[in-house]
Image 1 (cartoon, one colour):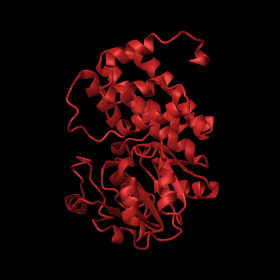
Image 2 (cartoon, rainbow, N blue to C red):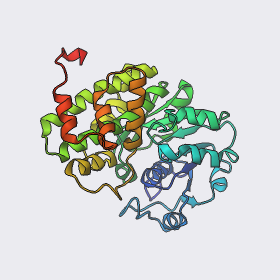
Image 3 (cartoon, rainbow, N blue to C red):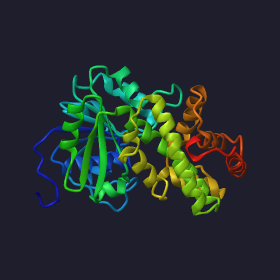
Length: 336
């Protein structure tokens, strides 16, 4: 180990595309796992800050290792890369991958590190990647993890999924470090669905808390939300055990219980009637609309998702949504 607390770089050359909190945290984690890291950020100010050993806009108070090489040139970031972590927000992924496509080394794995469903098309992020970069195998990293915890090196467990089980196993081993445990899965769709939908339920949990409806209501909402997650996951072919794991239930519990979650914080402000302008990006906002549409088209019973989408587009108020949910026909719990 070096004096800065990570392995001396001896592994892959990893390009991290995205200089926000999560991208910067993953750059640190990747460096600690023994890899050479180039961090791409569009904003030259972020690049300059990372070069100074900080990223105060996104990770205030956290010192960055000088081993991270930052650049605003995506071609330079991708040059010679053995692996690429794509950390653009879900709704910006297509734009970033299109910009990267002509510089992307053929055959190297691309690991999706954002969570969401494309609003305009209903496509999962892996489908977008396979469309734009057909020569690159796709994986996804997900699980209960806050950027600040990962950046500080606090114990965290995540899942790395790919359709190719051998690729998932290899990636999980390569990115595991002293306080970052990476498990592998070959259920790529299940991991993506869990990561995308938990953001919607985090908004709901925040709204329930913000509206002062009590801990009992929040617990009921999260539990019933998990049922909806499993229904939609099953429609996409996700395995139940995947949704019971870190990338499903684990991530749901974390993001529905802490204001560190941008989606929970968004819902909290919504429930308190506070202004939403200027709040950090909450991926659950666009995901709620497309998830509600998908559930409707596939005739999947998902009343919480539908309620969140309706609240966000101004169709109903939180009080009206709660009233509607509480007056649904009584059934056995397994039929709800």
